[in-house]
Length: 338
Image (tube, rainbow, N blue to C red):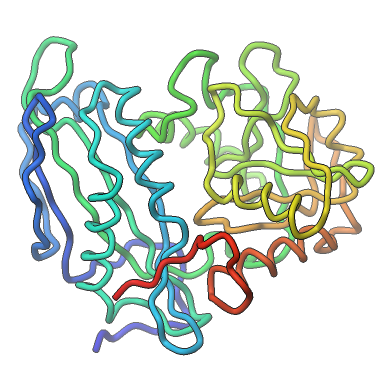
């Protein structure tokens, strides 16, 4: 058994025992892949991913149910999104069905690292990148697909408690017609400076506006944005510069089907969010995280007296209940890893 204090888990890197690796040539002929000991990999200094950023990744979680089952949430959706991201960056895509098989094999090979029920989860990181050496700006002659895992606790130290965010104008996350809809590695490198500046002022994360008009809410730093205005659930529409989150997609479905809410995917002027009765952000890491306030130009707008709102609470309970197999999963979203 592994020696980990499950009660002290944060969202930090902890090496585990095994990882999955597969390689492909320039035409996308991937080998069968295999589970190998976790460890460093060798890359040429001329590797395409190091010089031109040709790489994509995914984020997923495995967790234990009350009766000890190991479960995944909508893993095929992650495989499909990685395929779409890869195609945008001229990477031969890894088959989504084989993606799920690789994820399951890696989880099982590291099952001792899955935290006990309600103590956290096993974060799963599939990555796909141009590993071949190249000089000119062109697709890589070789590709590597890896899945590794890390036991984690809450992404935000606040847990399921409201966080403070700040709308920023000095930086943009993604440009129209760019790679914002792909889970590309470079998208996240560009967010490090604004994220650091925002956190230094006491905020959990930054909120980005659209690059064209600097008027509409796009994303929280690493999550999708939702708010409730006059009883309607609003979320930014997928314009090509917003990541199509799987948790986002699931929350929209739950709000419509289980809460009977009207959900609008639309351009949301930042001024409209200040009228919200409640707000939250979603993502694999964030799950559903309530937003207590948003600050813009040094003025703070507080939602629901900085308490978890009723819609946020209901959606959280529904989503987590399904993920833990504690309430009926009529969508067949959860897969048991055997």
